[in-house]
Length: 148
Length: 138
Image (cartoon, rainbow over all chains, first blue to last red; front, side, top):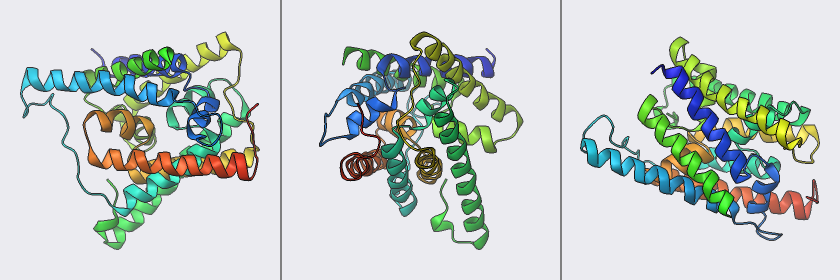
């Protein structure tokens, strides 16, 4: 099957999951992060549902094809570095302010409202900025800081 | 909560099919980064995934007639967008890449990332919603 077609279908299925679970609405994300307000556990439910299915799927693939096969799990990096911690911390701040992570932001973009458009353009700008910084770090020859 | 579980299962199924059919991790920040920085055939596939996501957004907007946007000044949304874009690329993943895919692979890096962004997210919500009292949900 064509790779673009399967990608399109997977993207659509992902979007349906976001909409069905309510995670397309930033209010529900903020309700999960708002531990001192009206806390909602729904995001945990979404994660639980998603991880259960994906974990079982990857296990099944590994058992079917063997641990060394192409279908087996990609190997996990072990290194906990400043880029991982710092990047995740920055992402969490932006997530907490807006209630958007990248997936729901793309879904919200389709509403045609100005807010999501501003967010997505800024998000793409942030990615370009990071790409630039990574390029400069790589050029200055300090590989310990390179994220990839 | 049932809808959350069902929706989550669909997301998990999407990540599974994407891995099996395209051999790619269904992390939206990674896909977005690829759509921005990869070359021709790969870039086109990343864009296709995003188009699928966007099309569902169109249908969702048509049926719910509701704009999924927080009640915040545009400048705050722009700042948040910058942080989300920069941070997810710096740490190599977001809620889907580290959260769904990474945790399903039992990745220690992803677990650390998820705990970190959930803690800073919760602190931020506390400061923004309760201390500064901005965009208090109705």
